[in-house]
Length: 397
Image (cartoon, rainbow, N blue to C red; front, side, top):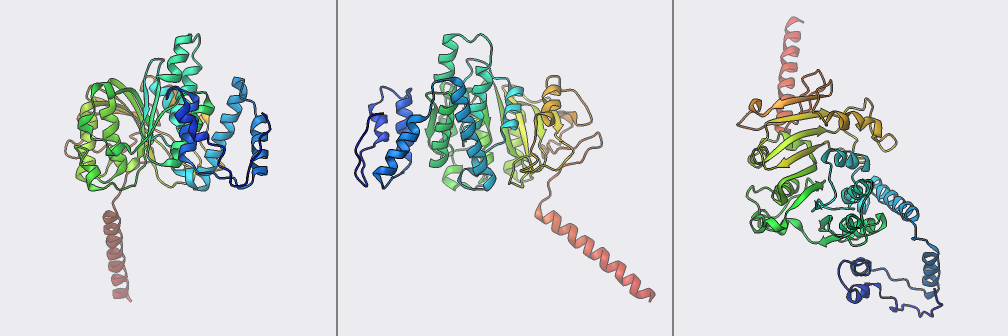
């Protein structure tokens, strides 16, 4: 790198200008311009800038091994941010869980893969790793992988930048990521040309959307995740497949929106698998989640459940491992029944509530969600019983 003179507070380094100079959006120059157009990072001292450039100049990105090492370091940084609950925390989904979902969904070369709540792009990066490992890929296959396979949308600026960087470091030179709020799109405007073969996502849940945003959806609700689920179903092609992480309360909530959404999912898609994840799967988060695996185009006849139970408490120092998920991946091929897995006919699901709660008939723990009112009612009942017992005791004294 040639020596360059710098002035203090100099603005001579304009990497964001790469976007204007790039020949097309499908270039690494354009994406670098996108990244630096989203962040503001001023180095006050020209001497410090010189040192930074020297360090960057010493990095090697030529071999696939070097790129893989750098992407691994970047992923570790994202994971640490998530575990610390800072900035990128909400964007990190355990990569082992993502890889297991991808192995079950089985994307293939030529599929268009979509995540409209892309976060740090973990699903897209892992899908790329899955597909690039296929044997005997042709030049056309590689071109398809880099340019016409992975698509995403992200609302938040930090996550958007993290996603693009993560994909580039994994080897995807022209990430098709758009900085936008997905939920502001009206579902009625989506056409066949807009649809995808595969949806892989962990949408944010617990958020509340404004009334004007809810107007874009046939089933109106303030719950962000439920709006995203409607979006995913709409964005799938007929025969398209999805793996979606969602809060486990979706399976049993009794509000009208939840019931309507479960009905819509069962009638418009084949919900062939529900993976029940244990507490602690998401490090640093106390919420319990399930993974919905479904195919669009035919109604659900039977749901295969798998209750993931590693037999230990999970946490930051004791996360899920490959052994924990091996049986799930194996049994999912045939929907086999076991002490942790079972099948439920849709004909046996309550048509009034479409309750999909995880109820293991093989003696496992029954996972249900109770409303705060139900809990308060139970406490009141127990208090009344206790008072009655005390009253009888006093009568005997």
